[in-house]
Image 1 (spheres, rainbow over the protein chains, first blue to last red):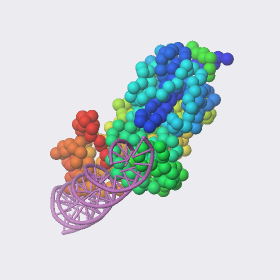
Image 2: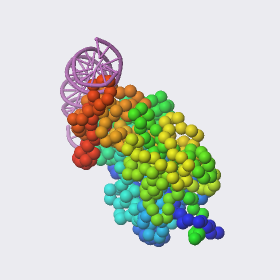
Image 3: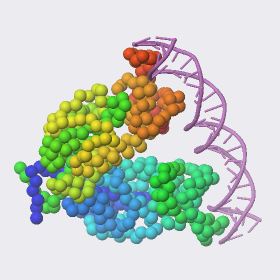
Image 4: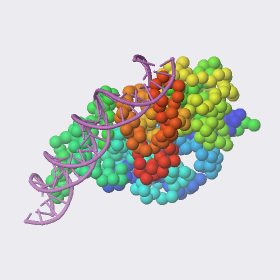
Length: 229
Length: 229
DNA sequence: TCAAAAGTGTTCTTGATACACCCATGC
DNA sequence: GCATGGGTGTATCAAGAACACTTTTGA
């Protein structure tokens, strides 16, 4: 059933930059488009916002439909409203970025997507629409945010070693960090719980596993505590 | 000429939180609505995004049409996409915030607005739609941003004294600052040019006037300089 | 016994904070 | 000459940066 309006209105979509981390590299999840325009080209997962769902819900739904991911960290990034982003017609998109624990989620390609794959964020194929611009902004935002909000943990398994955590930060920040200073600072916040469990299997001393105490962070946060790396 | 679509699409609007500063207080510009819904209630200036203009342009246009302001600092804030923001129909709005030099602009109420007026940001009347939520987010953002980007100058006249600048920061941050430390830091960046001109008319020693050197900031910025208060 | 990563403290340097008096003007 | 806001420097303190060796394990 078609709908009619007095004035033409832009279409509204959502697109998600999904970040994952696989022990050495920061990756973004892309889907291969199954439909025109840009058929068979790689793009960010996304799609139209329905009339009866919030924009946030649309982002969650599209993410799930196109990649099978759910219950992930999702945050609004920016709204892209240039005129010719989409060759078909006027489309405004609200971009989101998501952080997922790669180890804990299984991908599946579904609706509208032939395929879904992880790419190193700095070595992606040519992307459809203005998705490269969106990806670049998401990387910048992640880089900026990770030092003053404890969102890095969303990219790691629940249990992790301090070295893994440090490598993650080094990867995102594209910088190297001093091991002792890093540990001093992060442990000094008192947000990491040592588990008394250790990695096994390396030809070297086992590393202790830690867990991020989110509840404690939220409590401290309310009483003025400020996470900063 | 009406337009038809296979699926109903949300309407898309822009809304602007316009900040001004009048020597003692941070203010927001509101308009009194001339049309339903919420007729005769105060609201943020804004309106529908046209099919042939970018979202940024829509924000500029609405700001100009409803308040007469142009050439002001304007930045995208957040997109609000809940279901029942507007009682008429589904409307998603892209919110912006603007910073204006109150002294240098004359207001005028025009299209869709009976009246436009400045209100202290923490003492606004009840607002239409979810505009209070938008205003609150804008205040938070301004507060967060002003310490690490030199946007405060957009709220002051081109020539200002250090005391005026300090008062501005104190107002936005809702905190008091130490005079000597403030001056040391801000002058230490080398972005303020002393003009050798002085205020006149007070029953006290005249204060030197300064100007913010935006070009110098942009140049330094590219070579890694980071503004921080 | 060797290789490989884990773990651990101290010194130095830098930037943040705290603080009080003299100056120029108008009335 | 006094009231008002403008302008200035130093000493202390806290946090960030730099830096090297010992421990534990598997092969």
